[in-house]
Image (cartoon, rainbow, N blue to C red; front, side, top):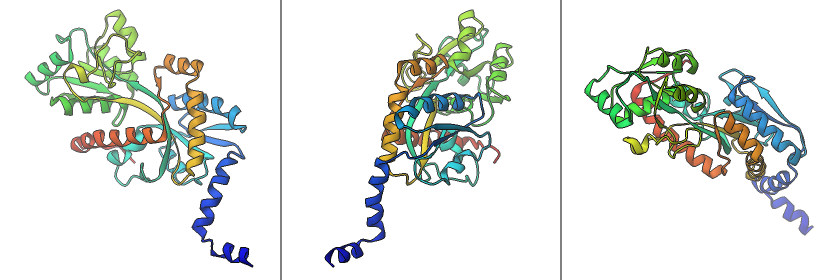
Length: 320
């Protein structure tokens, strides 16, 4: 009788609290899906590395499902919060509310970050005909001739575009943005002399820097990068506090049990730090991050705060 009374006094929330640790301890019991971008893209490449790395230790298949639509984040946000449906994507996930009216999800409220996966800086490069040889000289020229310099980038909201807009804002210069259909055409525009400046990936810029067709001034990461050895950072070259990186992260839906998120984080961090995986990612133009969920939240919120102000001030929007 006493046992029946005790059981009857347990509320639904209490029962959930008891059940959650048990569910987490038995996780996973079925295949896990990682939703990523189109086949052959950067998120697809990283998603498959993650899937291959964690499947053996989890004892379940980890399947990468490619999805090319812009509704990818909300598909995961609306999934069951059980750790079986994950999202792998970049900073557009947390910057969308600043780029689009009526964003279909809240990047903080609707997701549980598991870890940041990769990080890659941009390289600030100029045409060799330019008279500038440093970031400080570029700023001085831009201030002396406002509106006379152009920078090329991929479409609105892309990594190179965001790097350029942040530079304009923090350096206090008037440089004209010229959008192209992608990062490749944007780089070609600089090589041909159509524009004077661009922010390119280290991988795409390296051969042109080596051949003398481009002049590199700095990297956009907060610290010097092994991807562009020998280059100073923008922050130490005249724009204190500047930081712009292309970051990929992986999330579960919000309200996924903390123990499940921790298990996924532990397995992913272990897999990502394998020397072979780190080298493959480096050869592809990025560096492994593999941090804790709390660290990931801190980086995401800081980037939202930093870039949100710039995007609002510049009235930059993308189509829904």
